[in-house]
Length: 213
Image (cartoon, rainbow, N blue to C red):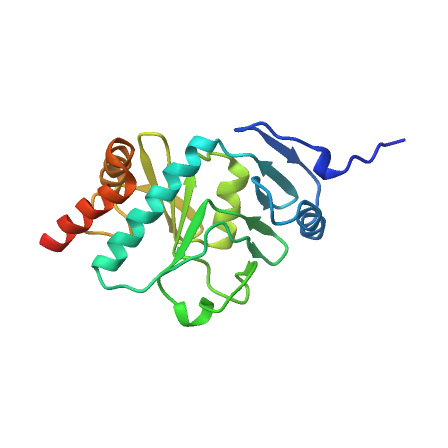
């Protein structure tokens, strides 16, 4: 006879993950309801595989700095944007994922008033998702199913760009959103600078550089 364990009783250490197989998206919805919104874990679901991950706390600051850099670039170009953070993205009960953060730059009129989870069968996916050092196949497959055009995988001293071409991701040296910038080198350099002198000081320096370019 099986023993039912409340999900709140499961404690994940930083950097650890739990993978559960043979679940439906409806099962995942029930799990999310039980876990609630006030949690430090993130989830990914793809074709029956459900993954709960507890990110390393040091990665939290890295993706926040990267998010600030994205905003500075978009602002310098006079482009409107919306930062949807770790909003749950889902598709037809087939896939779901919570990025570290994600951005809408196009189709803003369709998503600006949205609250809660985004179903990409009804709304477009975000233009960019940023993940801190996540190499899980469940996460990658979920992004592919949801058709996020561009995903950044941010390591401690590196950034890899994956562009959706057809139905698969291809690693690229150039960003689709920022084709005129060497993003894989620029963002890690700016993150290191932020860790040295502070994020606000780095951003002021960077915005000045963008204004003079």
